[in-house]
Length: 108
Image (cartoon, rainbow, N blue to C red; front, side, top):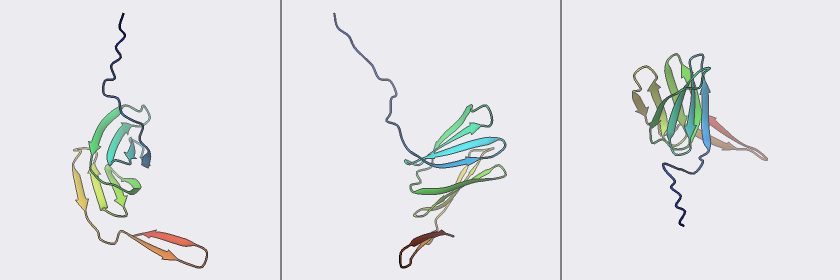
């Protein structure tokens, strides 16, 4: 007797680096740059988009547009109606300042 186990489409758990919630949508960003969009409040999976953006720090909804901010790669806009992605590269998206006992990180 031989036992064979198959792992279909299995992946390691990945950390969530961003979360945004609006009246209609919930969006999560994984550390690999994958954005998942769910309906609010029923949590149906609507889309899974790989925008290829690392170091995601901020996410927010501006109407039907999801605004994603990264310190190293700029800002991305995802239109939730058409799922179109627009990226703007900004060289100085974040600034770091150090004091005597503290350091601050500002996003612009």
